[in-house]
Amino acid sequence: MSKIPKSGDSSDEKVNKGSEIEEKSKAYNFNPDDVAPKEVQDQLVELLKWRDEVMRGIEEQLEMIPGLTDLIEELTLAMNACKLNIYRLHVHRKLTNH
Image (cartoon, rainbow, N blue to C red):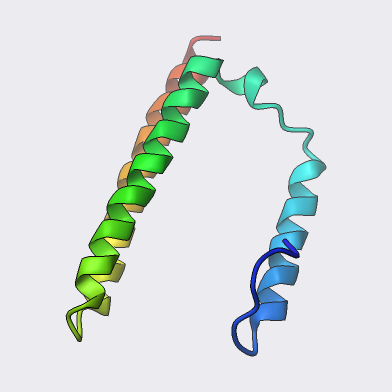
């Protein structure tokens, strides 16, 4: 978290919050291999990379047009909903196959 560049008054607070979340996650001893096989993990990583590429392209184009920040926000929320729905399907399938 210390590698995140600071930008603005609340940047220290945001970095501290990120560090706090990271520390809490260590308490769970989470091992992705216990939850999903390597193949599923690779598919999820591929999905996240694709989503990031699509969103960066959309944001770059829309930022050239003044007044479209609200639309960017709506697209981001829609992509996140899509991503979370796909996660839900993978997790549900994993949980019901045990």
